[in-house]
Image (cartoon, rainbow, N blue to C red; front, side, top):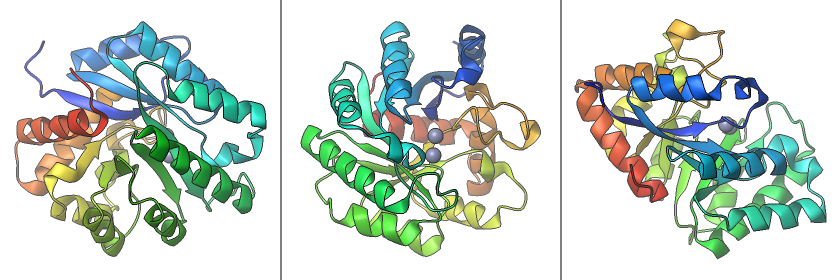
Length: 260
Ligand SMILES: [Zn+2]
Ligand SMILES: [Zn+2]
């Protein structure tokens, strides 16, 4: 290992075609940068299958399987069957990413709602945590989640709500996922939230290949850049990066029941 603080990237899309040609090098750079493990998150059935495959292949990769609101319209009975099977696979640590996206509305909202609800039901039955995608759908996402008080864990990934929503999440025992946008100078609201919430409820994530931290904005994101998010969080909270790393890594291990 190296002298850098050990992190877990709790939300990557290694299953994205953008990583197909150089995943070995990307994982090596992650390792060099102290990112010891990553949760590869599905967004439709084929990408979920690929996440499970990668998790079976690499000891530093875990899988989450699920259908993103963008892809809700593609859920045929056969796709549901496939998802259900995948959800029971080895090294699947969560159902995700699931939720509502009223910003891009790539699937009709009624279908988004239905597919979200059915996946929450599935996570509840299987007693695995959920990775929530919520874009411009805060009130409805929170209302829907409230119908499922028995979920084994909830992280609102790439948290973009306000202070009130953050408090509501914390009150219900949810975790907040913090990504590259924390490093954007104009993102003062997120900085304020990341400074104030209990450290034991934060999960660090890149959402790569999207959302590169400030120094790499506009380029493909990758887990090695997670150190920049940890650094910014440490700066905001007046802690060392090692302190932030050890707390958030412990959170990831606890939330996803993984081992490093
Ligand atoms: Zn997302
Ligand atoms: Zn994502």
